[in-house]
Length: 619
Image (tube, rainbow, N blue to C red):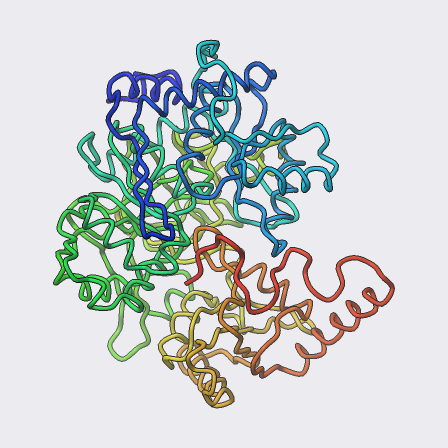
């Protein structure tokens, strides 16, 4: 099976539907009052439903236009997405708006940015969606319920004759809610990356795929919904809410359906270790699991070890672990662990890493564990590590920004020409003749062919001349006390000096912990392990730390919330200069509220303190 066989992903699905007929394409495990119910979607039924919807879209002149998909996880989303492909429309997957505000504001921004022509959703959500569209003055945007029977004549559908360069969908990244950016993924990008995923994982038409990730996020959509269609196999799916409420359901699904390939961010594996009981594992057999993808956030060596030890007795093998690296801008996958090898962990000198070199470790000196994100297949991607300032290529073993190129790299962000020239059109100094590269914004190092991701370029904190990786501090703090949960570490400028801010959740079961003692312990640990002052420590309620839909810590958002005084701590230790900075922001916000202006004390995109964004995986 090669990319060249198909002119578009729509053509691929049409072919698969002819080949597979009444065989299941998807099985969705829906949670109801009577327990879990398995809903089946055969290839032939998917084809009929998609042609029906595609005909409706074509009748309204929406070929080549953007169409917003607002669905909870379920089979209707898949029909709608494929319907957009069949119509030649550009699908725009997004989270269903919620009452908490964050996703509502985000989706409004997407509608404006993408100039959406229609919204597809479930009948139960139509009244709310129509009210929202009216309130936002989106009067020219049609809204259609796709779950109430045929909406047009499937026989009237016409093949849009798509080409590889035509847009398949816009993947809006999990960044600032005020300025959403839609990655333009073409049919050619999609075909190339699905082929790359199959090569890296060893997936075949006999592979059973399964997962729980949100369908509107790249990892869930590309990996768990579209990869099975590329292969012509079946995918067993469940909702993120089901997994978060009871992580054991994920492993039970793998066992019951003989899933070969599944995955998620690192926090998902950690959640399984912490919350799954022996009783929930009765009868579970994980021996069919061949590829456990771990990506979308830093991969922790401790988590890999703990997961393998915890579930090894139930058939999980160390070589099943598949740390990988990718992003929406590359459609999804860039690098992956060679099949059958398992994770590669390297211990390095902590001080050397701060200076930008991977070396050591040295006897008696502090060290850090780096997990390899695998290697890039030369057929799919070329990866270089580049100095972000000079744009010169960095030698092996030296940390720099990860730059990539290949057929899976998108052409850019929707209507962002200036940003695209900087991010997607970068050139390596002295090697300009090689063409353009994508600047990922991630820091990493190449050791031979192995890529080690060390952090985010914009999140690096410079304290007293030392480069501090937020992830390393967060990981160290979590080991200090069982009461300490998810954290966010970032730098903030106060009176011209960069200061470290450490915010960590305190688990609900530890409400009566000596918080002052925990904060003091965190300060001592950071001073000892990282040789930098930690004058700002906040302990907060569970759910305060924000994550993206893929589970990444939103440190930039947390910095903004903290600086505006919107983070409400259970206990806080603040440097006087930082305290004055936050107090000034609170005073300004209070004055604005008193004057009746918008955007007062709290960030208008933020959920209330102590809550988690709806439909967002929270570790």
